[in-house]
Length: 185
Image (cartoon, rainbow, N blue to C red; front, side, top):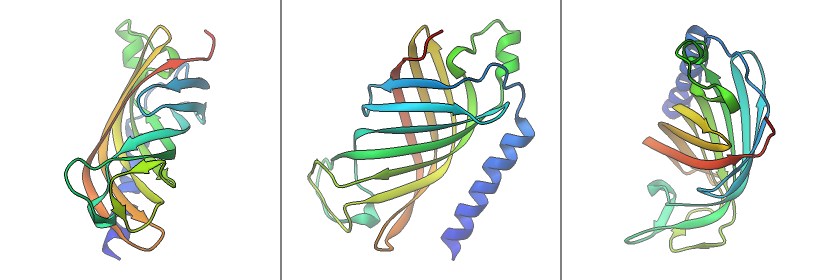
């Protein structure tokens, strides 16, 4: 019950902060991109003046979560297909424009709610409680475009779990991505 309350509280905070601090979603657009770090195809869909929802599917690499691990030593890796969904609320786009900075390809700072699922691994060097796991949590991030090159960084806590009821909390999860904007300008 405690973890569920924490997860709901985090969701409410993300939505509240996004609504309070949102300013100028001017120029948000639908973007199709190819990501190189954790290779994936991503589509970012405008959902409002200040918000987008992005969905990515690909093959990624990562480690295991301690409470979802039965046995693993040293450098632990998992290479598996994944789906990553993120609802982003942008809050500084008018300020970027007033300073002469680009907002092309949805460049800006945001708060978000992110969910990611990893499926049956292609390879791994760890024994886990389940071959499928999920993680959800709020993030703060920024994304920038330099011509067609896309850069994304976000950070935040996450609650993770598997289909067997095992789960835990990870205080700081970082996402870094570099990709190519495929949508025309």
